Image (cartoon, rainbow, N blue to C red; front, side, top):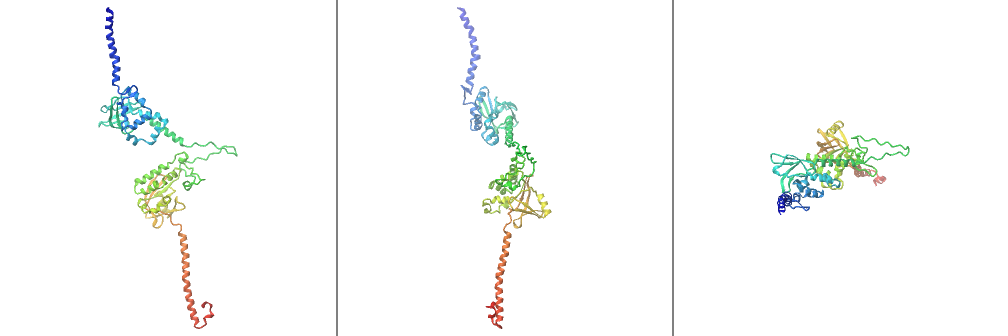
Length: 460
């Protein structure tokens, strides 16, 4: 009778110990856990807070990168600190090429690494913001720093909205830019370099001479900076049988000249210099000459641009620019296919007195001469002075400012002079004929007083 009772008293402490050590902690974890419940995310989770209107862009990226399951498991194990760039920061500061790289299907791993770099597996509130390195969910180290003035930084981004969202399982700090780990940046640079290399066309296979059955010797490569094989006029408007000049440039795979960047630089220089906005507007907006000039410079050609200032461009009539092709013809007459600076042109006109420069408007040339210690272009009232020398010079493009829009001289001047001389001769003959008739009539009257006038046929 005593043994069963003693057994019960012996088991009671053991059951109490089991309840307090195993069952109660499990129940408390189920009650206090706000995130994972039967595989579902709690509405009070920090992950749900990312769907707030300020962070919808980063939330969409998380969904595209297939990271929801990973973040659910992470938030179930420990608190999270999220450094989330706001929507306006992503739209403003993200490079288009880098964005295209992240969204390529083959770069999903890079996108996941970049996004997990914004999540820290620990709770870091604003009042205890450290200055130390922390490991992120991506495995990379992020540098957190805090200044005495209370401003915090996460890597290169500033924390502009600390403690923006507070949840039991995490904190969201708003930052002013996207965080890019070094590994993703290096991957992007590597892919970009490979793309540039693959864009170069491969060299063709060796050719065999059918007569000698020997390999043809390839043409020697053009050294850097050598002049193009074709004149600039052929490259400017190539016909069906004339290919662009095989000069060093982007077309040859050597990438020695970046003409489009140089044209962009000189147009920006014109705008920043001031007083040449109209000329730059014609190059970029009214015509496609900026693109054409960039192609020419890329293929190895050099240009000297005589740029009329805004005061000179304002004197142009509307009908002078409204005709199809008129703006292009005006600009072509101001493009010299040589590289000339203010010093070289002034030395030339001082030495030779008059110098004729070819233009891209065939067959017209620009006449330059020395005047008042400067260079004067054109003739007569339509002449222009070198007003702003060397606005832009980079060895390929030279821009010289002038104070008048230049026009080629009239081609019909010589025929008009010859026609005027012929007309004057006709008029002179017509006027002298009546004078000669009056003298004859007077002679006939004098002779008629002495001799019969009928004897002279000219007096009848």
